Image (cartoon, rainbow, N blue to C red; front, side, top):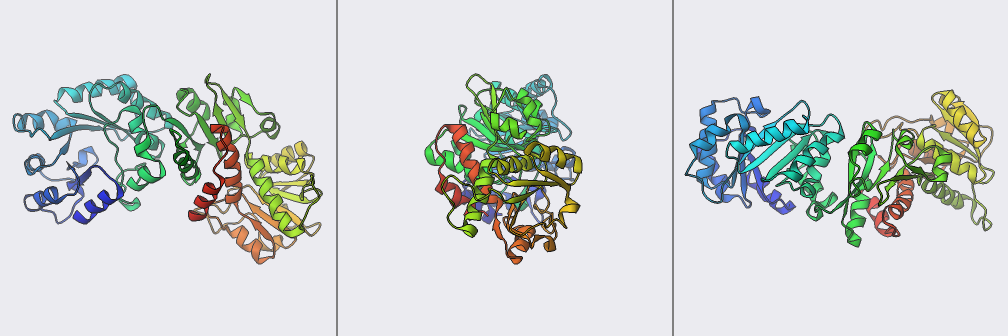
Length: 495
């Protein structure tokens, strides 16, 4: 345990929580004083009972006695539950050291109540004599975090506000923006105690937690799923490098319209990247759509203007098409000035969603002959008709080989982590392609790309599209040129 405490200090933690209910072979009468006195950091002692989501199943009188022992041994904080807070605070009345604080907590593992109900709960906790109020609710939607943010920012007492679950991650990351007393980070990924809890390392290194202030602008990526996205890695490093007071988060969003209606402040959702499955449905929530994005029928970049209105762009097609063109130049050598190596090429797009639309539109603009293959023929035909191309099903694409030197662009999610054994097209179908592009970037080397290389094709990774479209998004967000070398370095390190 002491080794873990030292590790927490080395990572950069300010306080270490000792969860007595999670320890085995631990004798508090013998071991607790040693832990507290030898800890390299201030200590917060918690012994959470099963009736409040913890693991302690023993005698309640003994549990409270151990928490009082922690105070006597020099702990800086103890966390007690609202249900027993009056009794506990009465038992230590007149005995508290000046440096000792009692956190009184309430956990709701079902939902996030109304603002009025949470405010009433805060008042009840204050009435127990709490030094610090702690409210933990559960996110059924990312917008549930707004209730906790509102309570925190108006609180007159020190408060810890947490919305549990993956949809509540932003409540933990934005604690300093809304006046939170502290937030919790796991020592390592395997030690996460509740869903949605980040590691301490990610808090400090990925999200630049120490730089977040009340006036920090909030950007992020909206999608479902979204945790795999490397965009926070790129944008947060870039913001820090140039000294921008901004943070970029993962937003797990179920309802785009509800998200933007709830988070409508100028400095919250100041700009968003948009990924699967929202690239098309998000169009309905925009005040203005860039003409190219409107033609494509899909967006991946949203900027909130100073007047609060939202304008949308599509940078996917720029990133993907330029990457494919550079790959073709490796094969064809010098291309006449002003000409695209895609001109006249037969390009097969797998998938007719947002990314598929971007690829098909961009390729057609460059003079390629576009074929759209999709699981459902109707969607393939709808897109193919818009770009003057042909349509087929994915099954038909297996035996489609009218000529050599074709280009393949996969925009489906087939082969993405964790389903890395899957591929959208069998290996035997890859022999006629001179170049294969996969929009997936987790993993970098998908099964499709590995088999394409074995078949003799040039491959273009999804990371290249991510980087290049990211350059354009960064410029739209900030008005500044993107730090291209930094983006490439980070993607190389974290591929």
